[in-house]
Amino acid sequence: ENILEGKPVIYRQITVPQPGGVEYCTDSGLVVPSVTYDLHKRLLSMAERSGLTLERRLEMTGVCASQMALTLLGGPNRLTPKNVHQRPTVALLCGPHVQGAQGVSCGRHLANHEVEVILFLPNFVKMIEAITNELTLFNKTGGKQVSSIKDLPESPVDLVINCLDCHENAFLRDQPWYRAAADWANQNRAPVLSIDPPVSGQDQAVEAKWSLCLGLPLSLAEGAGRVYLCDIGLPQQIFQEVGISYHSPFGCKFVIPLHSS
Amino acid sequence: ENILEGKPVIYRQITVPQPGGVEYCTDSGLVVPSVTYDLHKRLLSMAERSGLTLERRLEMTGVCASQMALTLLGGPNRLTPKNVHQRPTVALLCGPHVQGAQGVSCGRHLANHEVEVILFLPNFVKMIEAITNELTLFNKTGGKQVSSIKDLPESPVDLVINCLDCHENAFLRDQPWYRAAADWANQNRAPVLSIDPPVSGQDQAVEAKWSLCLGLPLSLAEGAGRVYLCDIGLPQQIFQEVGISYHSPFGCKFVIPLHSS
Image (cartoon, rainbow over all chains, first blue to last red; front, side):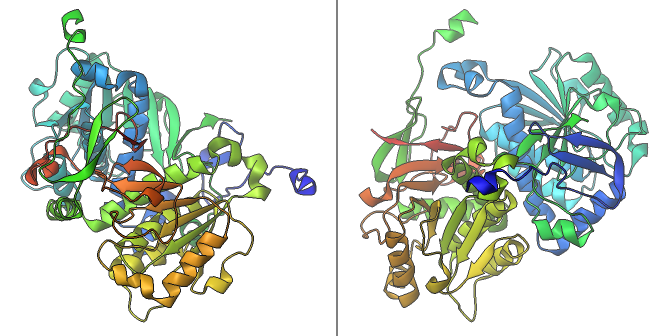
């Protein structure tokens, strides 16, 4: 056992074929390279093909993102039976895409934990199935859904969760609902958590205090704030199948902070 | 605000139409009644009908059960980059049913976190789909699958996870693979975590140190050890639809200890 303990620690346990431009490291010094959006997309489609379906990933992302949000809201100090009359309020801003569905899943888990959740989602005649499924479940919580910015609170909420952006349709940002929601978030003085924000290169319409990346980080813009990484349940071999050599940087956690190295 | 703070705390926030016989309470004193197996089953089938599919519940149960197991294994002290040569070993004993599938999901998440997982699952020609889907994913981790007790380690492992039992087929216990696995677990000196064990009334073939109930607790046998409750993501209205008046007892956690009151 003593001989084993003497072995040097290897800090570079993840190597990627298409580095995304930045390298992060964990609290314990493990190197986590960023990946390009293209590689990230291939990773997720490999997951899908292996049976780690979008539905599963939505559930896991919702759980882990809500665990992070509950910590940001004050954790056990804030959510005790004695504080039941002062429940924290979260405004959840979602666009009509997978990132929005991830947000709705997170919102359901928060509402399940007695957080006051107000979900903003613009009105569209037809939504993708991932969104409608999540909405059906969300609407069985005590959470509230609104489609107009006017129905969002005027006073500062405890936390804004931003899921307005998707990775491929930057033109969404020109739509009136997007601008209205981004303006509302910037005027409300609450800190912002962005879930799965797009790579840098585009301006951040809403400046975040924290950003949560899924699986492996993209190279995020400055306005993304402090970067966190969320485990989305991908087995090692799925990483290998897209050319990534991978050992988990998570230790016993499912959400970890990353630092620019 | 001061007036609100003065309101008395209500500790009985969950009431059930078919009490299961025992009442538990949380660390903060909230009362959590047990339910009958029949009511628990109706709760899960209502979840299924609402779109909270078995696949989703398997993912969430796997994540939360693995979070509990990682804590039992020593958490951040045990799983650091410096301890990589002394990874904890978990033996996971699964039967060919939904409870087994829950175990395999938990095993995948543990293996994803660099735990050495050895999954025992007896050989059957045909398995339920939930099991085969979980196995496909598990077999993409570094975990090992065995179908013979002879291939389980002889020396004590760090933790045994018991998912041999299901709620309805008590006769499984007479099968040779079940008896062999139970004997192995009782001979190995590792502590046992049971996930989703059946109600009391049947003898526990394997004595557990901890038992994890899903959603709401059943009334468990003495041999179930310390009882924990796992959030499985059910919105309030799903509880209401089967006649349960419900407020979350979880606070900011997803797995909480329950105490006999």
